[in-house]
View (tube, rainbow, N blue to C red):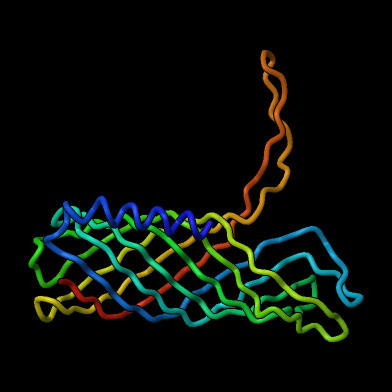
Length: 220
C-alpha cells in the first residue's frame, strides 16, 4: 500500500511540475489528535473478556509538500504521525496492550481562497491514502508473550484551516483534520429482490482521528 501511494505521489509531482512552476509550498505542523477504536467479537485475555480495541489520544505532527496547479488549487503529499497507546477494553476493565504509532500517508487536493499574494488565505482539502498502525512490537500484558505486527488500511482525510503570511515566503498555518480509517465490515443482514435474489449486507467499521494543529509554512 505504501509503495503504491509513493508511486502516485511521484506521478503527481512529475505531471504537476510543468503546470505549477510558479509556486511550491511546504509546511511543518504540530498539535493534538483524538482517536477512537472499534468493537470486535468478545475474547478472553488473561481470564478477562474484552470486546473493544481502543486507541488513545496523543500528540501529533505532520509534514506537507506540494505544488500549486493554479493560483488557488494545490496538490500535496501529507505525512502525519500520532503517538498513541493500544488498549483492549471490556465491560468493566481496560488493559494496555502496547505503545502505538499511527502514521497517515495521503495525497491531498487543496483549495485556497483569495488572491495568490494575499496575507490571509483560508483553505480546505480532501485526501486519499492509507493509515498505518505500528505497535511497539512487544505485548505489555503481564503473563502474555508475543509480538504485534503493523497493519495498513485505506483511509480518507478531510480538513480546513487558515494560513497567514507575515512575509512573502513564510507564514503561519492552523487547521483541523478528520481521518476515518476503514478497519473491517460487520454482517448487517440480507437484502432481497424478487428478481435478482438476496445479498448479504455489511456495515463498515471505521476508526476516526480528529487532529488540531498549528505550524509554519514556506512557499517558493
